[in-house]
Image 1 (cartoon, rainbow, N blue to C red):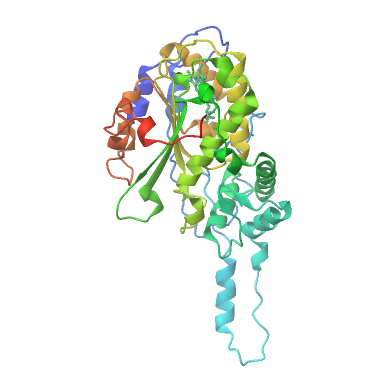
Image 2 (cartoon, rainbow, N blue to C red):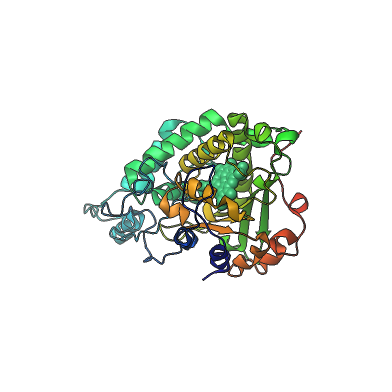
Length: 384
Ligand code: HEM
């Protein structure tokens, strides 16, 4: 049992959805939520190989049918490595064929543009929008960052090419419309968003491996002083929330990534923390409900496979019902990455396994570390 799970076990999480009532605690829900999603899966040799159609239903299709596709849906389903890497096949065939001979080339199947990654690339080009998460898309055959992005769409959809294509196309259309990179340059209202969101990054000296970098986004929703101010204008809140996510993506810096990912191996993900300390309102207002539901939906569609683990800290025991309510909107596989904790001071011990040495110590003291406060070590969307 991890420290998060122990903390969780201390804290009841009722399942009743009625927002105005505090219902009977139900430890089973807590246990399920704390379940870690790091299910071991067979390694795949072919990163782009789609999962077999017989894989379990896509996230969002099981349990909560109407729930959006999860932003951070895991790809835990083993992916059979049936097909040979087409490029390898081609290279092999060509090198074996002496240039002088007139014999016909060995038949190459499938050709490069038939791989799922190549098909996603074709779909991406067709939308006309050139970037995603700070990566200017280019031929994935030679451009690792693009290959990573496209593979994430396959992973989010359990290797289902049609679904991946659909989600990718919608993301690119959304980015063309929303212009998230411009939101990062925009200044938001200090009155509404001051102290509510930060991004931090931690590096392991001497290593260039992707594991040597950990990026966190922090949502200090306990710091909200006026629901009407912060959540009253939904689009404004969403824009700010998207700007925060894009800042985190800048730190993740996929554009400089050099290591391809597979269905099972993907170190390019972000930790998220929601801090509900000192929450001044104990009921979920309609504004909070719609802001949360809409954020979850937008993120599920447009930021798949970017969540490593998510910690909800300083959750007042009396608000266990909120957790139960929120889970209704989230796909089961994403929920497995959630860790509610009653005491934020225990957060630091969760990162003992990180490749970034003493990561926990680098966190602010509020979270059990020895590092500077978030205001000092973090950055957030611009405010005016
Ligand atoms: C009443 C004060 C609260 C506010 C203002 C609030 C705000 C939000 C918002 C805006 C989101 C959207 C997702 C995001 O920003 O990343 C969210 C998601 C969520 N919140 Fe809260 N929340 C509150 C209380 C709680 C409590 C007490 C819990 C219990 C643990 C909770 C659990 C969750 C969960 C599980 C999600 C889904 C996260 C995801 O899909 O990534 N919330 N919340």
